[in-house]
Structures are given as C-alpha cells and as structure tokens.
Image (cartoon, rainbow, N blue to C red; front, side, top):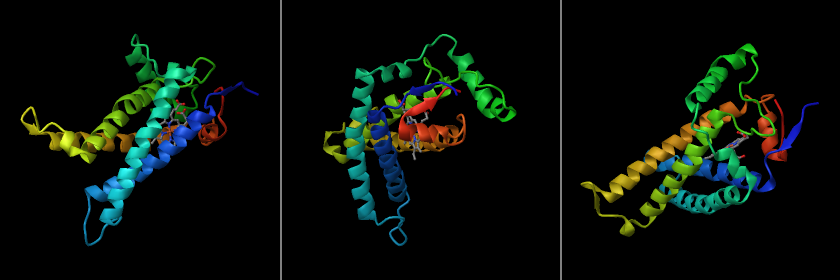
Length: 205
Ligand code: HEM
C-alpha cells in the first residue's frame, strides 16, 4: 500500500467546491449574455444578468478564502515556482501527458510528500488563481460600477478595455476548466484525483 497525504484540508475542499459551482454559473450565464438573442435566449436576459452578478460577487468573497488560506497555511508553498530549469520541467511534463502516460511510463514528477503539483499543474494554477481570476473579478466589479472606471486609457474607452479584458479572462478560465477536468483524470486511476478532492487524501504515485 503506497503512502497517503492529506493534501486537501477541509477549507480547500469548501473553497474549491464553491469556486467550481460559481465558475460554472458564470460561464453559462456569461455565454448567454455574450450571445444573447432575445427571441431564443439560452437563459432569459434579465435572469442571466442576475445570476452573473450574484455569482461574480460571491466568487470574489470566496477567492478571499483561497488567498488568505494560502497566505496562512503551508498550502501556499505549492504555488511557489523555481525559475531555474522551469522550461525543461514543463517540457518533460508535457511530453508525459501527450505521450509517456499512454505508454505506461512513470510520471517524471510523481506526487510525494514534498510535491503536490507537477510543474504544469503548478504554473496553470498560479496563472489562473493569481492573475486570471483576480483580473476577472476586478474588471467585473468595474463593469458593475462603471462610474469609477477611467473615461479614457491610452485613447480607448475605459469601459471598452475593461469589457475586453473581462471577456478574454473569462475565455481563458473556460479553456483552463476543460483542460483541468481532462488532466484531473490522469492521476493514479481516472477517478483518484476527484476522490482526493472529496475526502482530502492523495496517494503517492
Ligand atoms: C467541475 C469543476 C471542477 C472539478 C471537477 C475540479 C476538479 C479538481 C480536482 C480533481 C483537483 C485535484 C487534483 C489536483 O490537485 O490538481 C482540483 C484541484 C484544483 N482545482 Fe479544480 N476542479 C473544478 C473546477 C475548478 C475551477 C473552476 C478552478 C479555478 C478557476 C479550479 C482550480 C483548482 C486549483 C487551484 C486546484 C488546486 C487546489 C489546491 O490544492 O491548492 N478548479 N480540481
């Protein structure tokens, strides 16, 4: 029997579950707003606005659990990346996901006491959690209170720039989610990572 680590304490699981539900609500209502057709809406336009605003505000508060939790607990260490040799490590992991995994090779960065995330997980989580999500909710709040946005920035309308950034980050997080779900099935068994997010325990592999 391999060693087990309690990698996902309850606060992470609570934050992550709420985060996943809110992101799904935001994606569905966001797509509905973007491609709204009053004759055949995915979700009624007014309802989509309500859902999107509520979930965006809730996501901001929920993000504080993640941010403060990572500041105050050991979990934050998993988000610190070493720059030296990063490109090689990313390449090794990418090659494994695209090829080695299907040939039954051993993972180049196995899960262990000192390693919760492989380099690709680590960089994608850092980009999404410390850049994309904060930019999403900051631009979201700006669009909720447009009177506070700069009228003009570098010759462009402030509202236009906020909306573009908001949509770009929304798209990035949506693409991340699809890849995240797929890669999460590439654990010790296809369901083992999902089980870890439910009971908190991860087996070495
Ligand atoms: C239906 C939606 C989702 C499912 C089923 C899911 C599944 C998982 C699973 C199985 C893990 C554990 C594997 C691992 O350590 O990588 C995980 C971790 C993680 N997920 Fe998700 N995820 C979902 C949505 C999201 C979203 C929307 C985000 C961010 C926008 C996200 C960010 C993360 C992060 C940052 C971790 C690592 C947390 C930590 O331990 O510090 N997930 N997710």
